[in-house]
Length: 92
Image (cartoon, rainbow, N blue to C red; front, side, top):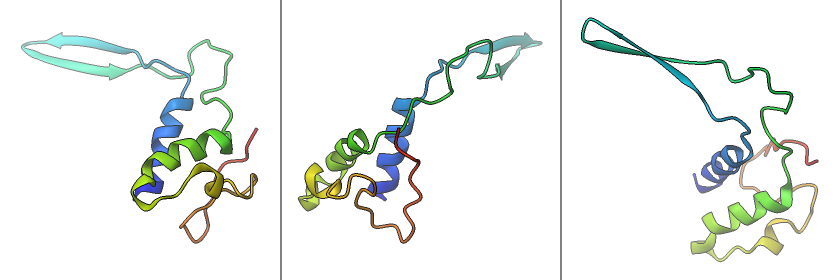
């Protein structure tokens, strides 16, 4: 569970948008609608995934078990994982 949570945290860190919403009050009820994330920005939706930084995040989640960053990225192209098929994004 901690490994999956670390992936979510790091992905949220890489997210490049601040979501915008519209509010429409109608007869005592307020409707909230999310605006499209793409907009007119030319930047990608997410920054490039970097295994070294991901390993730092994962290290914090795995502290109770004593895993350190250097163990996690012993192989820089394939960070340590307890998933059968890790399926991590390509590092930039």
